Length: 167
Image 1 (tube, rainbow, N blue to C red):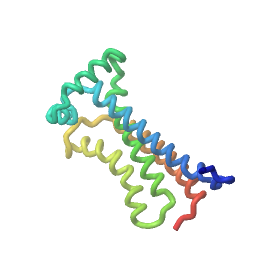
Image 2 (image 1 turned 135 degrees about the vertical axis):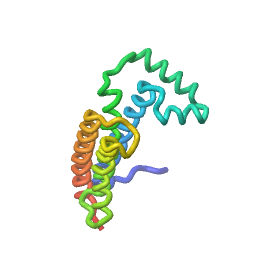
Image 3 (image 1 turned 120 degrees about the vertical axis):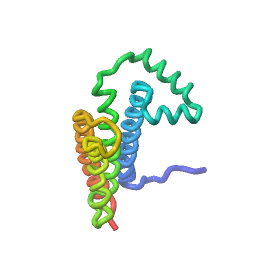
Image 4 (image 1 turned 90 degrees about the vertical axis):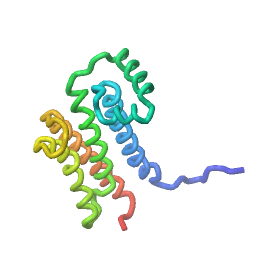
């Protein structure tokens, strides 16, 4: 008969809690941003065209129809800026959690990719180097998502790294 050990490994729950929290935060941010993007944004975005091309257009239309019944309209800042901010948050929290406090060029490269990717996309639209419409609201949402994600990821990383030895 199997029984639980008399004493559980000390701190095991403390070490895994931040990992679970990061996973949940990233999943919720990406999921919510994706749902807004798919079900309330205009039909002419690249991803919806891709879904139609691979035969999922009818499923997408059913989902859009259901979403419109529950929440017929959303403010423009939620439709257009919030998904960008949520994706910036998810990327920033994940990368900063993994690389915060790690020494070396790899860490600097990954941490530097946070502002480069989250703010760079909108900046390249402003310069006309990539397609899309530059928006100050998008840039602000990305900056808020990036900042809050980096701060939270770094805080959780410091807490977790303190509990495990760094090699």
